Length: 98
Image (cartoon, rainbow, N blue to C red; front, side, top):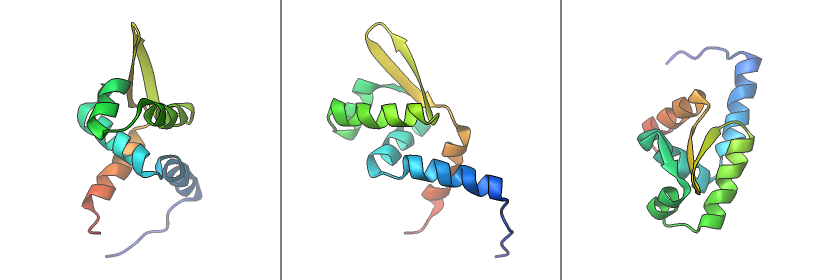
């Protein structure tokens, strides 16, 4: 397989994404959002069997870094992936043979 030299700007963007999502809980959240497009905090907690405080912490961090977006309906918050490149990274991860 022939590899190409990757531009510095692209490397920096990928490094930013990997640093931000490089935690098992964050990867699990993004994986669920890649499948469901948008989920409430409660749905994410139930699906991953995690406490709301932990999930909310990770969601907020990814939102502040521009990885996720958040909308509010009543008392519920709904999250979705804002940075499409994150889905590409998740797609690459799915193809890895670890």
